[in-house]
Image (cartoon, rainbow, N blue to C red; front, top):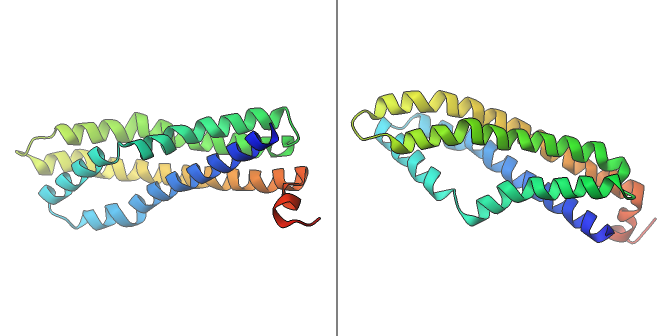
Length: 171
């Protein structure tokens, strides 16, 4: 059971880091780059991104990360990793904020932009861009904080259970 706990903690931490990085990359690179594009280019690029991103790898990370974090928390609550439990719960809650924002705000905006016709691209962009960007920053911040909490959970668990001795070979 200890191995399952370790693997679920590592998996959830890696998944949270990858998702936080994705949201952050949109915040500091993708959306600022598209800000200077004309309406047709902006809408076309976002429509293509929104279709392409819904793939098996994205869904595995997006949905698998909270499942692994929940498993890690359950196992920590009943095992030697108990000191890491508050950090696991914090990481899970912060990650779930990114899921909630994605489902409640970003996906509906993506869907509306996807349904936008070619006749009024400027209006479609105006309804989409500022709100999507602002809520993506919320996702990036919550995701990064969740990743940090899960990283710290690994440190705490390692200190409390002696995992570090297994990795370093020392005491």
